[in-house]
Every structure is written in C-alpha cells, then in structure tokens.
Length: 252
Image 1 (tube, rainbow, N blue to C red):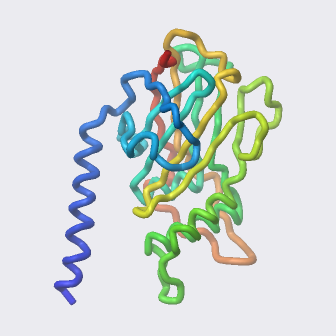
Image 2: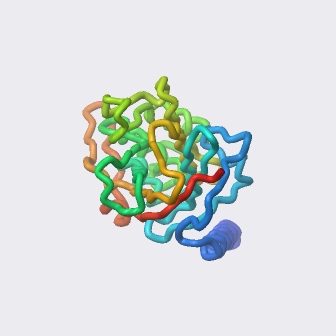
C-alpha cells in the first residue's frame, strides 16, 4: 500500500515543481506587444501558442497573453490551480480596456466571462470538485473530461458587457452577432484555459500605449438549490477579488 502511494505522490510533486519553476521564469506582466497567430481560434485550446503564454501574474496566479491582429484584441488565460479555477467559476474574469494609460478612464470597456449564477454555478463547481476528487463520497467517481467540458459549455452562455456604446444590453449570448467571442475549457490535466476575442471596432484604441485591467471577481453568492446539492464550500483563496494592471500597444 505504501509503495503504491509513493508512486502517485512523487510524480505529482515533481510536476508541481516544474510548474512553479516555469512560472518564475516569466514576467509578472506582459512586456511586449504580440501579433496573434494567423490561425488564431477562440476555442479554449492553446494550440496556436504551443502551450506557452507571455506572463505569469502572482497576484491572480494565472498565465496570460494579450495579443491582437488587424481586427480583434485577444486575451488568453491559463490556470493550473484548483482554488483559483473554483473562484473563476464562481465570479468570472473581468477584462477592462482603457483608452489611455491612466486607470480612471470613464469610458473604459469591461467584458466579464464566465457568468455563472444560481444553479448553473452550483452545477459547474460541484462537477469540477468531483473531477478533481475533492468531493468523492464513494457513490460518484471522477467525472470524465468530456462530461465536465460539456457541462461548462452548456452553463457558460452569457457574456456581460459594459462601456460599448453600440451594445446597449448589459448581457449578451456567447452566440452573439456582434463578434465578441468567449470560451473556456479544461484539458486532460484539468488545467483551465480561457479565451476572449473583442473586435477592435468597439474599443477605439489609440496607436500609442493604453492600459488594461484583469480581475478575478469574488463570488457574489453561494447558491442553494431545491433540486440538488449546494455548491461545495469556497476555498479560502476564493473569498476576495484579485487583479492586476498592465500596459499594451497594438502590434502592427
């Protein structure tokens, strides 16, 4: 029994050490402008990036890249830590784009995704907990990856919008006609990947440097359901928002 236990634990510790080492090699904020790959797709996969992003931010504990082409601005995020993924599922990620370097732009554009509330959030966090073996009462085994991603896509159908004059609705469908795309997905290691694409025509960005703000929101509710179990308890790290600011210039 002990021999089998060590076979499981040692590789996990080894992989964790590699992840920490890789994070330490990256800057805390992206330092350069990045032209989006020609085959860029908003599909919840890092195929275009060869699995490598530009920065690792310690405040939010996420890897990320901001990039652009001639038509869109992209935010790509990857998160390897269970507690942070749990917080994202509960509160979502808000990206704010300022038109200037200063942080108090009254016309900033903010896009929030995923937006999970009530029973949808409860379903997503419960299945994620089961998938990571955090909630396993013996009756329900680990969740297949395909089942987890199918549920996530089924529940994450809303994008919240603020500051875009041409879009008056505060919330739009992920299947919108405005060209704003957002998707998230888990890979085989249960690493969470988030991708957002915003048409540049909605942002009116300058040719010079502007600022951006990435915020992982704190959950605003812990849903209780009459037709199923409540969401699992929030980890300690999921009780407060975390965020960071950066600067970017559109890549030519």
